[in-house]
Image (cartoon, rainbow, N blue to C red; front, top):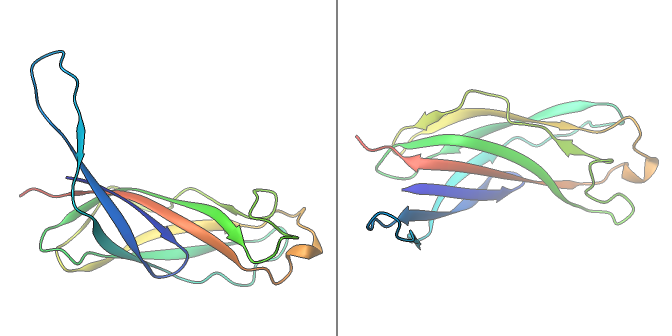
Length: 148
């Protein structure tokens, strides 16, 4: 079962949609069928103290509520919103870099595990309109059920 998920800022539950390919004769079209929705939690630390030219990281921790292990294969962060129309969620104002940490990562059944971090950068060219603005970072990930 393949699980994909998305999270918006902070410690929020992520919605997962599973997909399974059906088998058929050679050359037949394969169709994906959805599995029921699943959730797991990624806790992220708040980032503060950003100023033009600075970088901070949000540490990630994954909690697996299932009776089976999850194998996390991808994590990514995207800046998706800001609290001010004068400083929109745009790469010129704030960027979320590539995941830093080891992947794949196995999260044991009903356990939590640190999952690296996402660097958050504010370019040196940012204007004063971005002072005090709150940005929303969406973190997406892909995990699969570990079959024993």
